[in-house]
Image (cartoon, rainbow, N blue to C red; front, side, top):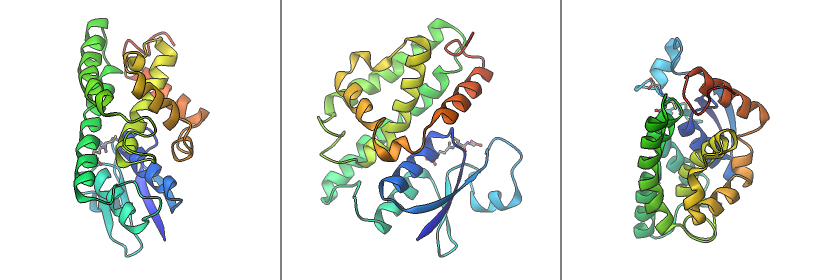
Length: 219
Ligand SMILES: N[C@@H](CCC(=O)N[C@@H](CS)C(=O)NCC(=O)O)C(=O)O
């Protein structure tokens, strides 16, 4: 089974889908499209909210909303599973994936923040969420012995925390040892490694620099 994934490489929601497909070794074709640029007519039909990711499946139907797509992939490719067998545990995983998703907004905003105070405010918001996650984070993956949907949501944030730490020395995970260990593990996990390389890093940094934020200033 092969899929067409429409998205752009810097979108963390797209990365959730790509990590899941990689984890399950499912075949896919990437169609890069920036949703903030002029949109082709076909994309407007494929994506009612005008957002990426969207994924076309073999029946010709098009799916949107990253976690709906992640769960579809899980149902089509059960091994390795990224959700628990028990309905209760699955609900708990979805809940923690939702908590992890709360990092996305402030993380994105922090990279465009113009002053130290503004950066700190976004970091403080993220730290509240990280504190909750730290309390629940397991010793292997976030929940259990294998990668789960929570890790799929966390990995795109860890990628960004790592870039920000390497260029600014400001590592938000310093106070969260379990999450730091999980980040180290996920950033070298095969399905995550596949979506980032030197070219990705450069594109990410160049794009953030253009937003004029303090963290990426003078690079
Ligand atoms: N809830 C959506 C969010 C997707 C999203 O916000 N994607 C951004 C790019 S990272 C986008 O397409 N933005 C275009 C827009 O808002 O017009 C999901 O999980 O798929």
